[in-house]
Image (cartoon, rainbow, N blue to C red; front, side, top):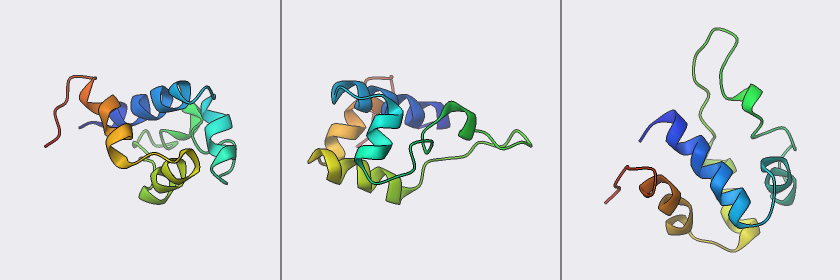
Length: 81
């Protein structure tokens, strides 16, 4: 599971719920810029991973469980067991 896999999963999760990443963040009680592409890397070039709290909030706001999120990681070629 890579940094890119997680961010791609968030993008696909938002699309599945008919939202942009910004809309998903707002719907979840997060700052609308939480999932912006510009926030995925530090100024020093280090990857920034979404927090487990952010993932938990998007699951809660959409009424989904973790398997609905991880299916997007699995579909990217990564298999989680």
